Length: 232
Image (cartoon, rainbow, N blue to C red; front, side, top):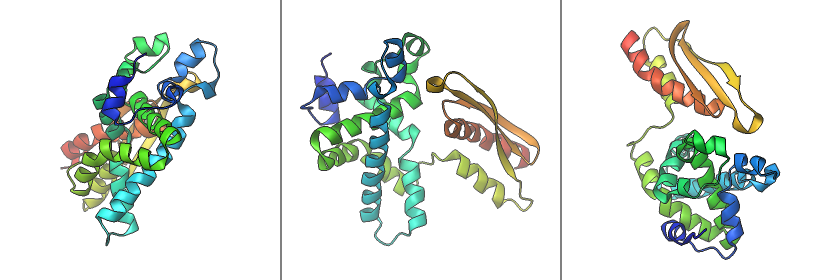
């Protein structure tokens, strides 16, 4: 496959294209074609997550020289999350190149936030291994700088779980917010989790995600409006 357009959008040309190919290989593709789990992008995703965390942490450290650890951690969590990575991945059109199994592809896997976010992390790791840390850091900032700026300026709030907990604690009659994983299904590489959230024992919302964390965030996003409707 010709990756020229992708490399132009990314801002980096690979010396070892096999690294990019691995970054674009979903686990379902590997298993359907008789490969091993380490042939997929999961291991690269692990490294990419660490690289992005460090790059964004350093950027925030420099942007807010008087900010405390708590503030920096909160802003990083807003910028470094599945939604922001998926947004960048769509801009890079990673879904167009992502190699998936037939089942995953048929169910819209090329546009799922979880797949796109994981792929973006894996691509950053591929850049890191191919070109070194400084080059990878440049790629991260090229693609995430706008998100980081918005997070610092309070223009985005993507940690819906924390937001719901904050809203509940601001009331005079505080509610205890409880997230419950109420369902789980699928093989290890394609798990789905059902999460429900309650204010005390009052049901607020339920949602499904590819991880427990994703399910909780999606659930909390729905629950915020329901909580406001019920309790003002």
